[in-house]
Image 1 (cartoon, rainbow, N blue to C red):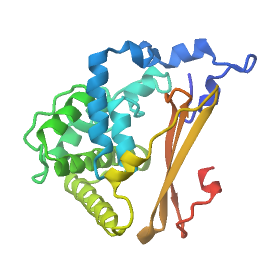
Image 2 (image 1 turned 90 degrees about the vertical axis):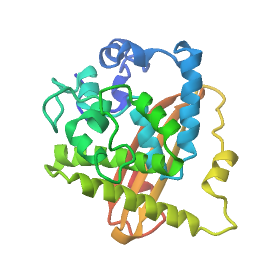
Image 3 (image 1 turned 135 degrees about the vertical axis):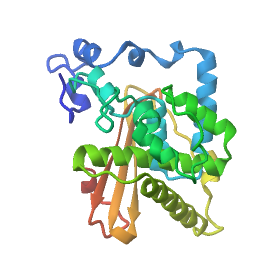
Length: 270
């Protein structure tokens, strides 16, 4: 059984230097091992549309990555950790009633439902039944205005951060505080974007101008970025590693405090 802080290198064989196939089959389920081309053309088209709408939202990049991880079932919920034999049970650490899937912790858990039931929530009267995250994200994208979807994306991440606060720090924020923090963070981000000046590319233009380029040969590509919050001297860092086909190998993010300069030094990635 792998521990919670296990790294990708632990899936490699010490003798051959290649993948430890037996261990990988133990910690990953069959669906996760299937290549994308086997998942069906219709699902691929729907996914492409969902990604296009997600990447075009005017929200922080870390929130886009979080929503992507939620849709693709990549969050370390108790249920996912149980599949990888990291934990021994999948019970939700917040409500302690049902298994903690991604949909449960973000949407159908009664404690998450308190956040979505806030009066300012565009979905406060929607049913919160357990279903695939991609389904309710697609429904949001098709039925809500873009500014409402942007708020929902911010709230999703705040719900997850509240869950982590309870699990790791034994603190739990109220639903109105969670929703208000999401709105405040979105407002601050969009105001900062509007102050960049007319001479710079806006978010949509950057998305059209910058494209990930595939690599040649058996190599990997590492992309990273960082954001600084000047008011509390904190920094967030994100890293994505892809292979030569563009397939995601590793994604991670971390938080650093007491960062006084907007120039993020390499040691912050350690």
